[in-house]
Image 1: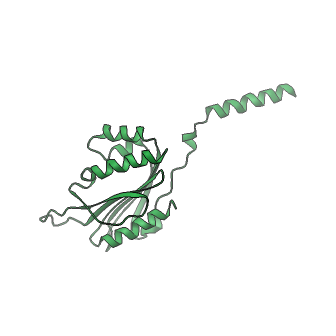
Image 2: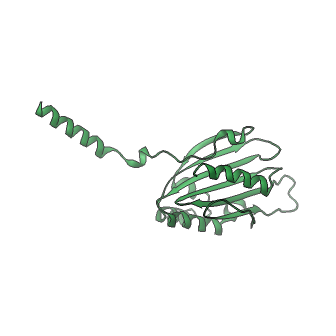
Length: 186
């Protein structure tokens, strides 16, 4: 009996040593599919490489994410055609601490052009502790250019980002969607 108990202890200890906490960490919630029922959506878990792909200088953003303690993220992307939105990307990003989340927001605030192309700051009053918001600067001659908004804000060590484009996209409609996303972490 003592041998069986000792063997069981060794097996359980080995199993515990082999587990990796990051493998069991569930991705954080983001907007549900039902938030924009008329658009198709897909969800994916984000890692450092996926986020760094947003930047022209991917190595720089990877360094910020690594130094900032980025742990995991999730993204829901919507696409289709409605009177308001045609394309929406909602993200929830988790950092080890507020400083890391703030460092990412600082990067986003300085690199709106990386994501939108020509970005202008917008006065959208975001939820959360701090944030940045942009609107695509219209080119004036692009016939199919859609109003497009990008924002990121922080709730503690969590950063929420929202990109939304569509012929009926307005600051008020964008803000309403941002508030829905914000509710996922409150």
